[in-house]
Image (spheres, rainbow, N blue to C red):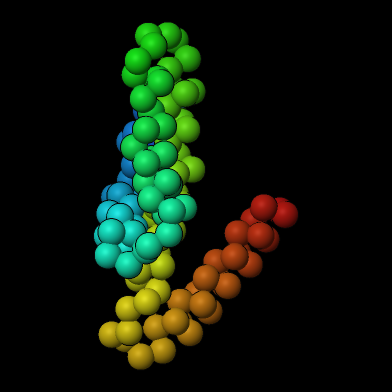
Length: 117
């Protein structure tokens, strides 16, 4: 877990396209989920927004291009959420949903207590 968290410490704020391996993998799984299973317009609009969000930053040379390129971040996380949805639907491990829910609740409490501290 520490090795996974170390990847997030070294993020360059001037490069919003540099994602650690875990979100990259979840985004790929999310894209697979959308292509294979999702039939709603929101999912496809989100993929289009993820692909088109950095275009204005590329087209106009300016110093604030990095700030414009950060528009890709929420769409990337939404795409990663679809990847989690795909992982959540896997039924290869019995009781995997229960284990994941308990672990997620524990991390939520831990994060909330850290934020309150």
